[in-house]
Length: 251
Ligand SMILES: Nc1ncnc2c1ncn2[C@@H]1O[C@H](COP(=O)(O)OP(=O)(O)OP(=O)(O)O)[C@@H](O)[C@H]1O
Ligand SMILES: [Mg+2]
View 1 (spheres, rainbow, N blue to C red):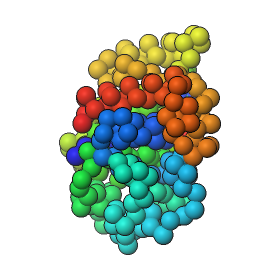
View 2 (cartoon, rainbow, N blue to C red; view 1 turned 90 degrees about the vertical axis):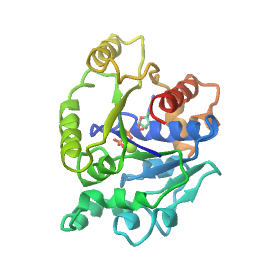
View 3 (cartoon, helix red, strand yellow; view 1 turned 90 degrees about the horizontal axis):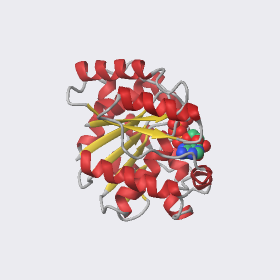
View 4 (spheres, rainbow, N blue to C red; view 1 turned 60 degrees about the horizontal axis):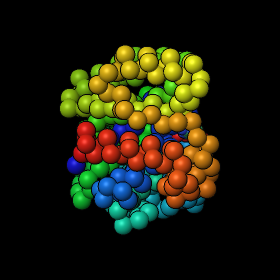
C-alpha cells in the first residue's frame, strides 16, 4: 500500500486541489480504493468534498490517539474515503511537542489501516510537526509547484527537511514526483519556470502540467471535484493524466 504526501511549505500552490482531484480520479477512473487524509487545520481538503460540519472524530483525535483512522473515516463514495481535519489541529503542534515519538503518530495510526490501494496526505503550508508526521508515515512524496517566478525558491529547504526525515525517521521515503500547477503557456514567466523545473527535476517532473483554470477554484467552493463540476474542462483531463502517471510510477 502506497502512502503519498503532497507537499510544499509555500502556501496556495495547489496541494489541496491536487489531492482532491487526483484522489477522485484514482478512485473513479482507475478503480483504486483511495483514502485521503487532511492534516491541515485550514480544512480545505475536507471542505473540498462538502464536509463543512466538524465530524465527531477527525485527524485531531487520531493524532491524540483518542480515535483510530477507521473511526475518523468518512465514506465519500464506495472507493473514496476521507479522514477530515478540524480547526483544532492548529493546537496539535503545541500539544504534541512534549510527546515522545511525536514524529511517528500518524505512521502508527496508519499501521492498522488496510484495504486501500493508495493513501494521499494533504499537508499544511509549513514544515512543522504535521508535515514531518506525514513524511514519516509515507512511502512517497509528490512536490506540488506553481509555475511562477519564485517556484524553485524554497525547494532547497523542503529537500533539507525530507533529507532529515530520510536520515532519522523514514529511510525509505522517496521523492517520486514533481507536479507543476497553475500553468499558463501564454505567460513567458510560467514557461521559464517550467523550463527551470525540467532542468532541476528531469526524472521527477510529471509530463502533464495543470493549467491555470478558474473552474478548479469554482469546483472547490462548490464542494465538488472538477470531474463532477466541469468534466469537459482541460483541468479534468489533466488531473486524470496525473492520476494515471501516479498509477504507473508509484502504485
Ligand atoms: N490550476 C489552478 N488554476 C487556478 N486556480 C487554482 C488552480 N489550482 C488551485 N487553484 C486555486 O488556488 C487556490 C490555492 O489552491 P490550493 O488550496 O489547492 O493550494 P494549497 O497549496 O493547498 O494551499 P495551502 O498551502 O494554503 O494549503 C485555491 O483557491 C484553488 O482553488
Ligand atoms: Mg491546502
